Length: 214
View 1 (cartoon, rainbow, N blue to C red):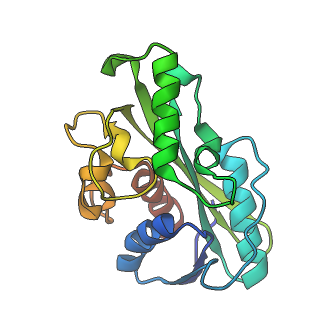
View 2: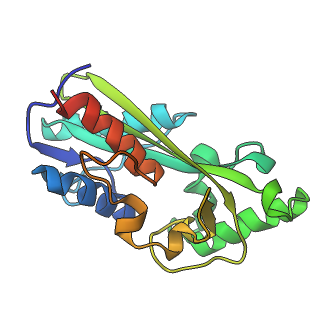
């Protein structure tokens, strides 16, 4: 595993919600970070069929464009009753004809698919959020970190916090959805904490323990 020697990196994302969560996580560690969106980098085509492949595509594109290490995230909602969908195509389910994304529409699509599959009870709607972080260097070296959180898809959506599918995901052991949790509750992890809740925070915990700690 290669250690990260610099405190200046690029957050390889154009997704405002992801950028905010990653900056929340790396900020307390003393990083200076700008996003690919802020730097006006072209958003690469995510042609991979796994979270790992797409995370690499995004991180390498920003590392090459900036000459700095870049940290990307590829994440999605994996629903058992739907054979793992939407999975790596989680964002695609939100795409509209004009190219914008509508996650209210996406959540409705998920609910319609679950109803069609006959998954009406909570125990039939098991799912997990997956996040794969990729740290890439300009020389092409990459490190991957995967975090997952188990839960279930609820309906109707609850809460206006977070982003994406958060209002319909209730993590295991909780009575609230990610959409009802504050940022601190959902992904407020820092070094020394034994546990992290969100998929992104869990992946970040592995990143810190692998690439930052001696």
